[in-house]
Image (tube, rainbow, N blue to C red; front, top):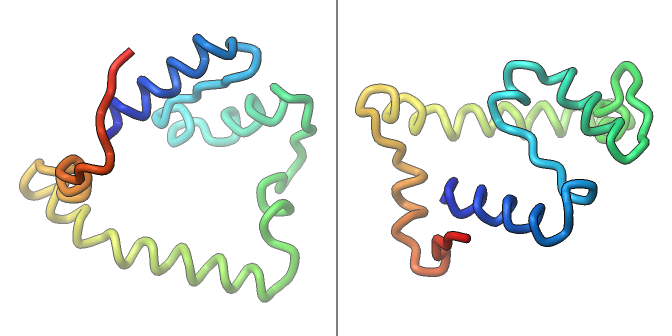
Length: 108
């Protein structure tokens, strides 16, 4: 699935041009999140200030609480899969998605 997504991104960049399609690696986002956000925000000319992403999604206490609940649920629900993958070295979610016939892998 990762390969298919990468191939699709590369194909889109080739077809539409590097000035319209920006590809950022997962590792870059994880290891340098602020740099990545500044780079992505600056690319189309959007200003990046302190709390740029927070202002876009969190408008009041209710939205903050909802976001906190979603993030906590995400961690709780994916933790068993992360533990399984750590112990066995096999990613169960990716293996399950690879078995779905509706998600074909393709190459350029």
